Length: 465
Image (cartoon, rainbow, N blue to C red; front, top):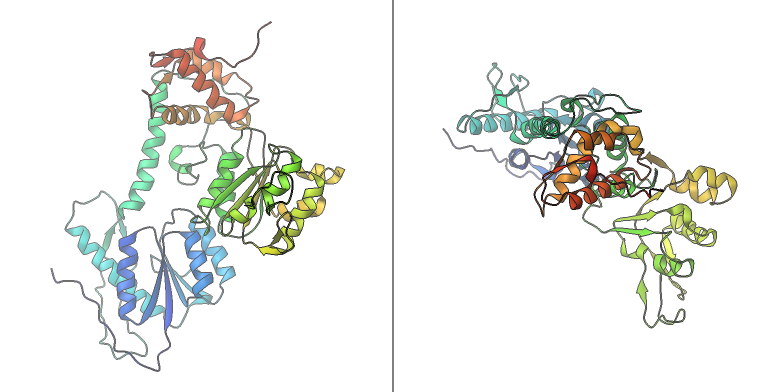
């Protein structure tokens, strides 16, 4: 096999440098395209996912973007739709060679298609030397291509389509998710009832159709859980403030962490503060920081939580418990991005993305005067609601296995029998997913060396009169 080579064009002072952005989780795919495009006098920037691609596009303003057929953090169709609206003049091409919008077709489209074709050829050659996978995806057929404005020989590509095996990352992601979901049910079935009575819920959709849609942090395939994942993907790449509402124990902080992980700020700090857990007299200094001698006991200055999150994400848990006086100071920071430490006359500019959470309807509090309405409207630009466990109780087997695996890192993994599963399914779960985790942890301790939890080990901690 001939070694793969890319023609490198001589420098030309009249040719304006062009920038291309390649977004793909497949490192080899990015490297192949970068090598080819560099030979065509493109400056290439790479991104591993949709959120990073969005950030790179904001910084580099590329002429063209090549997006792989699968992104690890964002839905491809939603990403393309939002990206096209934000960057209308950028030529966006998917890995299959199709345009996200024909009206955005740029003057260098043939070069992009040529680079994709050469990348596909080298990928196919590499796969032919490796064990085959029982999956193939055809590449779009391209006939004769001529590069504009360059004295290159005409490249005639074969008319027959070149089959390209699915890249390992794509195939493994879809296949392993389906097998993992199937094994979840199988492992529980060995000790669980064949038919579990679940109230207020319907059978969950097939794992194959929804496992690829939900985020790994969001355990459960119910429609309400998939909606949480969808909303997280949509808003994560943006600077938009997010308000998370949901009952206690429903995973609001997990959603906030997912928003940070999928954003372009993921390499910067994620700082969380519980507004209900800190006394009112100390909360201002904890948020904004203070100087030495600002109050009794302040023997040295301290950086506040907001300033500590500079460049990253600030998570304000239980924002509804924040005192009204402090809400006005937070409002000023939200509006102008500047804060003033307690005891200091100077202002400090801080760049943070604010994510707030509350267990009570904040709109109702704003209407009744318990929460500043102007602050509410600035925090609730995008709303995500985490459902109570009773709303997606069909996900109970998946949640049980998830927590058993988590607890099984330090001890043999356990399972539940039919009587224990029936008892768990009949509970109302006022403490939601957090209560489920604690009940299972208590049951594991009570079971001792027994690998199976029975109904006698399921203790909800309720007093019996």
